[in-house]
Image (cartoon, rainbow, N blue to C red):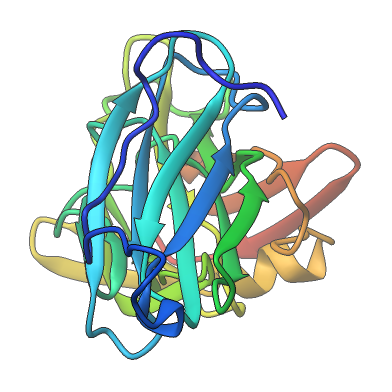
Length: 258
């Protein structure tokens, strides 16, 4: 395993190292984290015990490839790696999307490592854990400014220490359509088809759309190692909402009330 020639390896003194005269069952485990597969210049790491009694988070700037060494408690340790560093908030419960925001373009990896011995290791390989959903106005729409506001709501607010979708409130109001007739929202990896979209006129909700169910019926795979992006077209002039990604398409009808 490659190692940095420079002093990049970090030692967490938790607890301090043991001497040969001490009971070595109480010594920490020396955990090697192989970051050579990380394609970015930095990564956020969160290490924690499954019972939540210990957690350590830090941001590392990577000089290329190497081996990060940490002293960690004996037992089982959850290792969560996330990029970019400016995204979300780490806690003992994992990584959380800030309330009211959409999901950052996040890449992550997670491992539960057996640290019952004196030495353990794991390798980090970051994967795309967001779907960029692009909503476009149909080219043959009325040409008038879009009179509605759109919100997307879901039940995933981030990721657990083990990397699974974390249950919590996700609610994001999409920005107005730009000059090209587009607006976007980044969605975190989902655990079911519970995503919804609302169309609002002023403060009135005109229609709920079962966005997650539409994507599921179209074949969208939330379990893929790297999530695909998706596109949706909204033709409000003809009260039609069409969702497609690659080879699939779905159309629903709603009443336009103005």
